[in-house]
Amino acid sequence: MSLSNNTYGFDRPFEPDPLAQRALPYLKEKLNLVDIGCGEGADSVFFAQQGLEVTALDNNNESLNRLKSYADDHGFSKITLENCNIIDYNYLKNYFDAASCLLVGCCMRRSEFEKMLQSVKATLKPNGIMIMSLRNYLDPTFVEYASSLDPIEPNTYYKPDDCCEIRYYIEKGRLKEVFHDFEVLYYFEGLAPDKYREVEEHGDSYIICRKIET
Ligand SMILES: C[S@@+](CC[C@H](N)C(=O)[O-])C[C@H]1O[C@@H](n2cnc3c(N)ncnc32)[C@H](O)[C@@H]1O
Figure: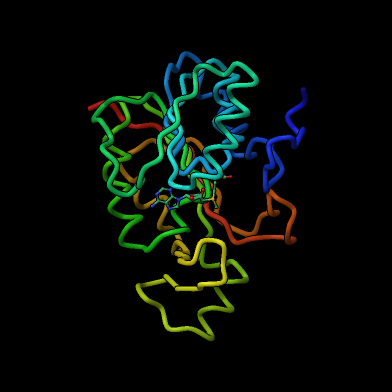
């Protein structure tokens, strides 16, 4: 059965994020990965296919159920699903070889993103790989919201009709700054095609970086 098969009711194209694919060379010999805000889990499945043991975290029951059905039917025994709040989840220290957090920090308040970051950085083992993407200040919706709405926090807007309700747009240079104590392996900040092909382009910040051994 192919990955594009939609027997499971996936909302989005069930295919790995380009940043997940770009991270592959850095994941050789890594054993476990936490997919934070996994959504429907296309990246969790992709990482599991590479042999990683994946812990997939989200609080959207429907997405997790679809992923569970897909993983059960396709024999992905190496994916563990947890329905939880990723902001105050009990991330074990020095536990994961890799963490992915793709288009998730932009679905919460800035303060929540900053709080989550501390635990996510700490859950990586030395030499652990972080793979992260967020919408940024260049995004056309940020430009629109900033001109019509009052922010609820810096760069953060409440938009009840948006799929995430709360949108944080990371500031210029900020993603590199928050990982200043990691070795940067790949960084991008600019306009990039929408991975779901729903609109032409987004303002995005991407990072792949390695936790430095101390
Ligand atoms: C835009 S989707 C991205 C999903 C997936 N990473 C991807 O790239 O396809 C954001 C995901 O983060 C999850 N999420 C946002 N805030 C969360 C929270 N506080 N706790 C758990 N999951 C959360 C949402 O349920 C949603 O599935």
